[in-house]
Length: 149
Image (cartoon, rainbow, N blue to C red; front, side, top):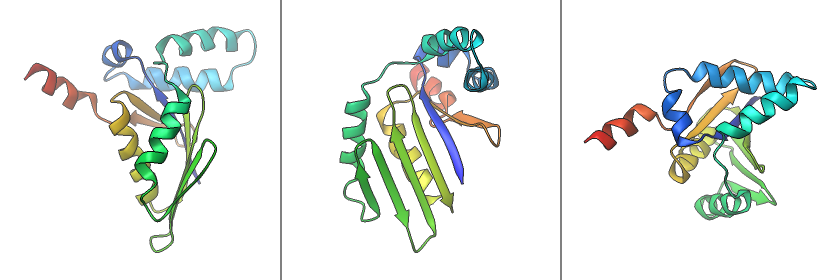
C-alpha cells in the first residue's frame, strides 16, 4: 500500500522552494515524527507555509468531479476509486489541513486522483514518508513559463 499526504502550499512559499522541495519534505517529516515542544515549533512552521482551503468545499468539488466515474464511491470525507479490471484502487480522505491518499495495485486510480486535484489548485505537494518521495502535482516550472509568456 502506498500512502501520500498532500498539502496545499502557499504560492509564495512554493516559488521560493521550487527546486528545494526536499526542505519541505524534511519539515513535514520532522513535524510528523516530533514530540513536544518540537511539535509545536514545527507545527507553526507548517501552518505558515500551508495555503488554507475549505475542506468541505474541496470535498464537494471532488465528489462533483468524480461522481460520473463508474468506479467511484464516497462517504463523508472519503472518496474511493476501484478499477477491478486494472487491479488498481485508491482512496482520498479530505482533512482540514491536508489530504491523505492511499492506493494499491497499479497506478491508474491514484493518478486519476492526482490529475483531478491538479485542476483544483496548482500548488499541491504530495509526500510519501515511507518511500521518501515527494513532488508537485503540477510542475511549477511549467507555470513559470506560462506566466512569463
